[in-house]
Image (cartoon, rainbow, N blue to C red; front, side):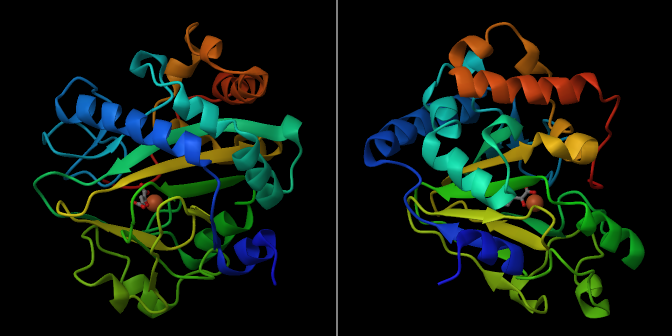
Length: 288
Ligand SMILES: O=C(O)CCC(=O)C(=O)O
Ligand SMILES: [Fe+2]
């Protein structure tokens, strides 16, 4: 049996069950219902807008495929931060990043949801490497990408994500490049050489290297509420700054936020605030 760390290193992703306790699951489901409803009714402006694959998401369509910043104090749902800083989740993240408690950096926590009235999809991409990067640029970017983890935790069965196992370590083959050079999503994601579809059962978490080659499809008829987050290892310094700060995390510096966190959460928050202080304009990782 391989450890979760070995699988994560080899394949670029690993599926882990049971990181949400049964009691927390009910509370998180309700919290998700609340924030989804606020987003769909236009009361929460920080959302992923159908028609835009990557930040900035704009506001051009009323339909949404995600809720941004679920730990934001204005949403008033403490369950999200409680789970993000839980022992179960932080110990899995520490194991995957091989870091200490004092290195953990708070980053993104968003929610991925089904659009209500449109099918939508993301093209094949790596989160922080442009599709037109040369082979050498791609290799260099992948070499430094060791200081964070991203995960999807499904509350309901979720088959939206596709990825190419192992592609977090190697630049694309010419054929893979052909399937990831247009800004349009693929008609059939499984035409990408090496691609698999990831299915998560309720309560399962897929941790993945966010620079693995991946894409996703969204179906308005299939309920989705998937917790989508990243955590960093502060020893990575500025390597993750653009990837994380492009989503707009200035709200984390507001006075109200640390009051909603426990001691671990406050220490993790201090590390992302230090990163923000030391970073100028980051721009955006990908073309939109
Ligand atoms: O919907 C998903 O599971 C993937 C989302 C994604 O790849 C992204 O936001 O960059
Ligand atoms: Fe992505």
